[in-house]
Length: 99
Image 1 (cartoon, rainbow, N blue to C red):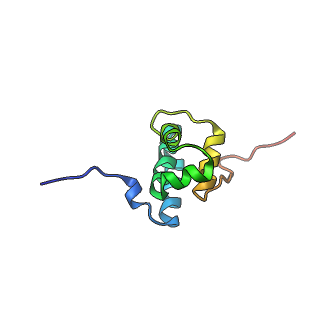
Image 2 (image 1 turned 90 degrees about the horizontal axis):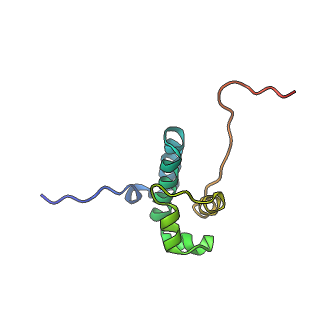
Image 3 (image 1 turned 60 degrees about the vertical axis):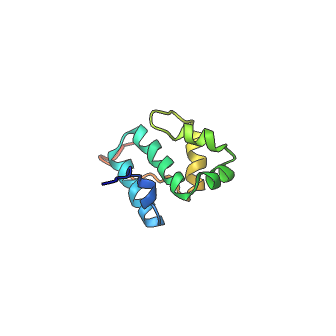
């Protein structure tokens, strides 16, 4: 029996799947998990397309979005915009009081 390696990027084929995947990783993962998830989404869309939209090279994108990398916030924001995402803040926990 022949098996193939599982690649989540093969299943991220709609905006809904991408949104659910990234939200799940944001809710349950750590920083590295989020970076890898953004990389998986970029791969599912096409790294060449993401490179063209961000102005970054494909090799630098693969490096920045790999496990253990520490990309600059600017890079993450460029990639998020290129994949059609944005960051929104929702309150969690207790309300903060301002004095």
